[in-house]
Length: 252
Image (cartoon, rainbow, N blue to C red; front, side, top):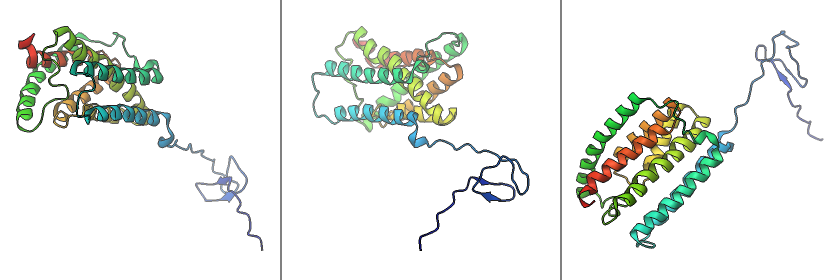
């Protein structure tokens, strides 16, 4: 005997459980109106998740390959320029793919008072971090990724590569591209938390998580609160600049 074909259900009443292979707007048994349920899209098939994974994989792969290299590829300064250029191109490409939502460069929501408080707080935080980093580096670590880079370099070179570059491109990537895609997958709180965590770990400095994570969370909150990148860009620049002057000011 041939197995009986299974009849696909076209209608099932949520009130009386009446089932039929025909579709109805009202249940023929109890008269209840049909409630159409929208199926949530599979997040693993989302272009937002695919974009996030692609960005994280490409950036981390490049950083890890460079990190595990025993010697500098070209020279210390040249390597810094190379790394900044490659990562900057990656950040820009993904931001462009995300569209104008990543390029939040409008000044409409920039307020003097919160900006001033932010900068004063970051200057104080920079002094705390510098003291803490020196202590930890001397006792627990081998130092920063580009710790020796600034020595012997003109101030303008250090400012461009250690202050301006990360302030613009890292904010564009983490508070622009990443947060936009994370918000499409979840809520604002999750977007702030995940983007801040990724910002911290992609510096490939375990001890740096102590200060990079709170900074990433703060910049993420300000980006969503005011819908502009300028709090992150300005704060990022000021923080890095103060750290640079504290650690290397005597040589300039």
